[in-house]
Image: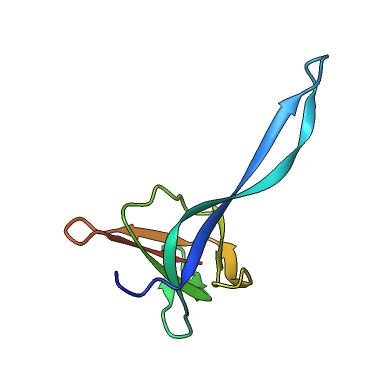
Length: 105
């Protein structure tokens, strides 16, 4: 992919335990995955098996094979560090022949 003006990040929660073995409330950490292109989406609709309709707000395309799962929380940053788009992943497509992945959130 030639045009990658944005940066894809995924949110993960870190947790630890205190000296008594009780869990401490986790903190959210944003991890950078790869450069990407985040486009507004207003036309594509997905229909679930039970008849529900979902229209994602953003379509993200990036190089390589991503291991991001559905319902993961991601965001795209522009080159100034502002959030371009964020949300939960609805669908992930990894292509076999072409080396890029698509996400809808």
